[in-house]
Image 1 (tube, helix red, strand yellow):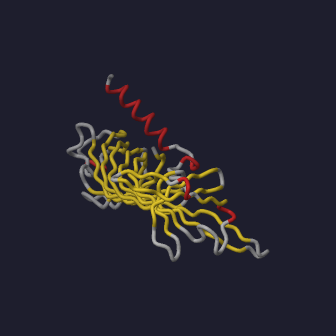
Image 2 (spheres, rainbow, N blue to C red; image 1 turned 60 degrees about the vertical axis):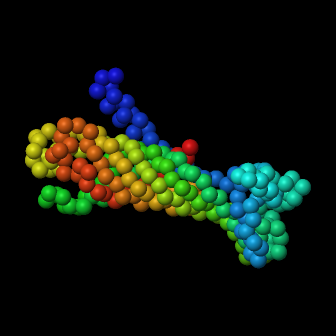
Image 3 (cartoon, rainbow, N blue to C red; image 1 turned 60 degrees about the horizontal axis):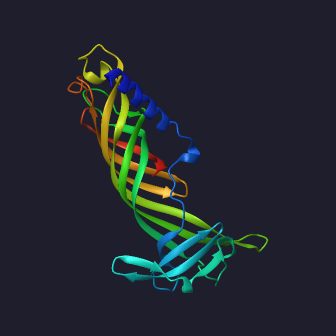
Length: 239
């Protein structure tokens, strides 16, 4: 593939990922699977959760070696919105540990001052793959309305940390090359970073510390080449 065609392809991919609508932002929904169940006054235990529409069925788990097996005879189920004080799962939390593999973008990038160019806060089209370790907490919250009607729902928060790597586009001009080029163009760069994310319900945001490498012959005069930056990262899609 010619270099020009490759550049066009990368632009299309990055632009597509950077224009994902808000409802597609990375999500880690509560779903059927193995969890650690934490309930008030009870020792945490391993359970298997079977989610059926708006109801949750919980089974105890038997551990044999490194394998886990649900015990169907121990299953208990309840509609989430009907959980009340003193009932099964009241104020409980389901905890899940997992590997996380996401598509992300650096929404804002802060670059410290270099070579007479002041601090920069900018956004350019970019996309990164993220790999990290994750812990999710699905908490059952209950409240009583002014009409003395009870209702329960799930509140999700999550934390994870890991590595980011991907590509982006950045302006290259005399200002960011100490006047060593008269050209003004959008250059491609490779970026890598370490990041920590916080998730609440469907929104996942993080902070990253990273470095960029310009992928052309002007990399040696680009003042930001291999210089650290701090970025605000958004999760776009969870694989």
